[in-house]
Length: 183
Length: 294
Image (tube, rainbow over all chains, first blue to last red; front, side, top):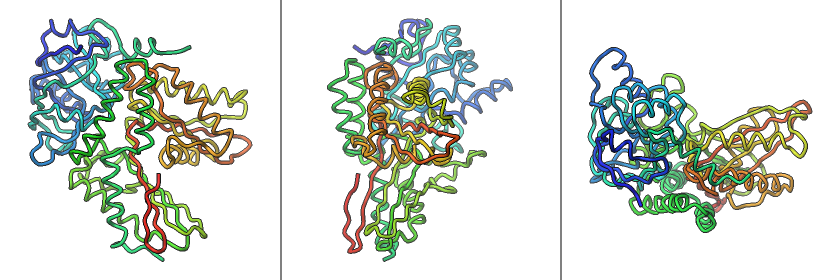
């Protein structure tokens, strides 16, 4: 059975999530890839205001396809999260509670999730058309010049993910692989 | 006969759109069979979601993945049918497909990262031409290979000693590379392995192996065939599973292509392909007859 959660995420909700949980997310999530992260972190370092309040929010690592007429968004599957590792801890320090992508995170990012009570969730890589069905609205927030890599505010309904790293230090990539590994 | 643009362009545009919306039928069958055998319920539902995604992409006439990957084109031609200005036609088809919403603009300058916004760019797509004078037909294969998969790739120039007894060194290199890549290359993956030549040759062969062959074929070379099947079984014991979250289905295929090399070296290149096997091919005969290949 999948757990249903709503964004923004409270600390209590984050604490209930466990590695391996199937989760359906509803509410607002923000898109950002490497280029946008670089700009966000530069703003934080300069002490300037971010284009959106990241407190309690979830960032989805995705560069969606342009929307066809009448659709909210084009295909929108996850990209490789590791590319955002250098930037993720500072965002969590500033209140980010969730990240969605694919693939393993660095030790620094995993430690930051425990320290700041945040979670990392994976969506199915490659299934961009299917995932886009859960996106009901998309709105440009910042960095239009980045094209598909701009920051967008997505309103999602029952967006399916699995918790990979919870705030208690568990890692599904380690647990799941161990369970099915044949020596 | 040299192919005229007006005769060839619609074939090429159709190949591009087909590769955005669909995966190869052989790979769909391999995934269906894997679902039957998979012991993890989560892994089974993930693979079913992958097949549903492909079906939805067809129904909605949209790309199955937000990333088109990087395009490579393999052309084999002889004196009877020559490819003409096929490079220009492919470049034009990619830009048009982008304008029509089938491809996200993803081609950038390698250093400045400037994105022209239409999937145009120097050496896009990548072409490999093979001239076989007596071949009667023209073969065109297009492959879009995702770039999360590319992040797992590895290359090593082995010495004879490092290859090890029964190629144990090579096998270890493959298994370590797959383990390290984990969920990044969008498993279940296929692996292309290029062996021989020098570094450039092994790398080119690794991409060709996984991009121009059906994933359910059998290598005509007995040694490569037995290595392919042994490595596939070994990879599927690693437990990585679909999306890397655990399961029996980590790889759908292992494909090896080889080339003679020098006594001093044994270059080995490992090339990951995500589950979205977006490839399509067409064969054109001198009388204009067309046939789907792959």
